[in-house]
Image 1 (tube, rainbow, N blue to C red):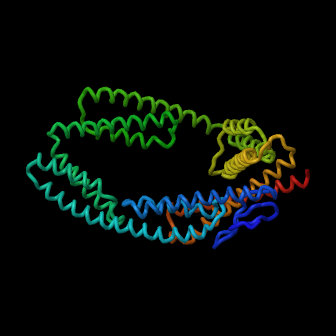
Image 2 (cartoon, one colour):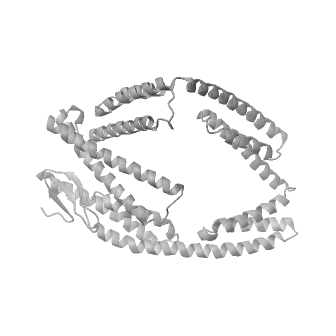
Length: 422
């Protein structure tokens, strides 16, 4: 049968290529399954198109147009891998001018908001000069309401405007501490800060984050002294909690240091030997991970944890080897689980059939990962940043994506070899 925007090849239904987007395999089909499969994927395309129609309608009819920009972007990003049959190029052609309209709308709104906030700052200067505190208080409340209702200003001046407004308003309320209502607000803010300090220290204890939290706890102790006074009845209770939690923290910190000293005293050669033996066991386990119960892997993880300290700086290859094998284990487990979900009766099939099912799953995942890698490389090529932590983060992400592709290729080759042997 003739399939609009698609074709069947080797009993596989494909969405045809368009523009810069490659053909996408949708499903393996028998001859009598083609028609219902085509109808199903046409329906999926229609659903996506209806979603775009709905967003376009809202853009044309609603005032807050900028809020739909991310939804429009999400649809555009999904099109290269969307499993449907239809004219996706038309959708892209519709999205492009809509995005341009919204981006222009957002920019103009920000310019308008900048003008409004600059005018509000002039009003604030007049209010702060008003000697009548009660009248000024009502004016400040109205001004704050209008400021909050005004959207974001242009990014180039946003921080400056917000800081000027905050400085002015904070200064007004500091002068008005004699009024009961403002005193209550100040007390609640201080009490909240006290509670936040106690909660943060408690979270370090609950998460057992002692190694990197000591400097932060010392900062929190300084903050505690600088928060300010609150009524004695409120302070007594929170102060008791504070001293209890800090004492608990430092007691546990002391135990951790003692424990660390004992671990470091352990013979590192013995630990290194033990970890290398575990790596050999783990490598063998990973090679047979398809269909394997996770208990064996969990046992090796516990064994690794209890095998003693080995310096990451001196022996980085040992720790990296463990992490790489762990990631490969998890990937194989995920692929096995996904094959079970996608293929009815998978668990009861013979090995050769199972590896064929695994092969299809790995191909799909490899295609997805290669597409993401290509897109990532293109995006990085368009950036003009050559230093800083952001670049380091991008490089780490690129490396991770490259490793995912390499692992999928190796697994693909392994399954192909298994099928030949069975």
